[in-house]
Length: 311
Ligand code: UDP
Image (cartoon, protein in one colour):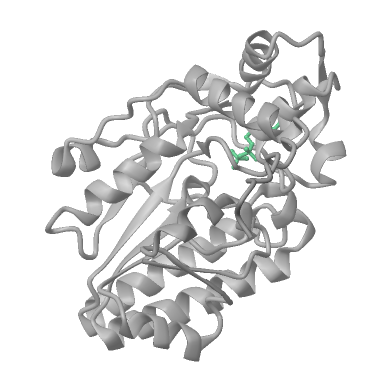
């Protein structure tokens, strides 16, 4: 297996433990590098295209980069995969549903965005373009390609730097800072443990009949953001408090928040039998354990004993 990453938002520590077993190779580079992508495609049968700018914070502060890296990268990946007969799983996002408010979003639902002049919609626009591109390659050039829409994937090793709420809350709770709940905190999300998201991707890769289709991946249990904050404080046994931060302070003027975002995953279940196995509390506990371990000082180097008689 080859991992291609430019490490612009990711971290080498997340994959380092897997690089020693001889089965995983890491290449530092960009999905916008057509020659490199083509070289790697020639040696593989399947490509899981996850590369993207992440996090609302980054999207709002760097809309141009979000848009262009995603659009260019997806075109390079789809062109090369199609040319080399490689199957593609393209990760899109629940953001593409935009302002849809009904409670179980299906893959056939219309996508309702706000104005493209508002930076929030940049990510949805970029990912929707990626989806449309994939369908174009599938219909016109026979690409074996599938879209997955991920709903609020959370878990250990996720960074909070670009907005993601759970690692931010956990770090705040462990360091005794106030947990910054945006808006009134009543907005809900279906937080999905990364292990469930990954098992869904693997189940799709094991299935026939996915080409040209779209699948939601996400848990069925909405949790209000303020409730998430309460649970983090409780499970981390932290004295931290909750502070409500207006959206305008968090993301600047003109930010539009989404109240509800809940997936209907029956298409995925019907095809693969997939069900989420981990609760949001398990995700919280795993993130707490990971962040605690990060905060601990590194263990001392092992003491090297001198062995008498050996040169
Ligand atoms: N959020 C929050 N405090 C933070 C970061 C995020 O209250 O420090 C909220 C954010 O406004 C949204 C939810 O948590 O309602 C999930 O945010 P995230 O960026 O993780 O994912 P999103 O659902 O926005 O893609």
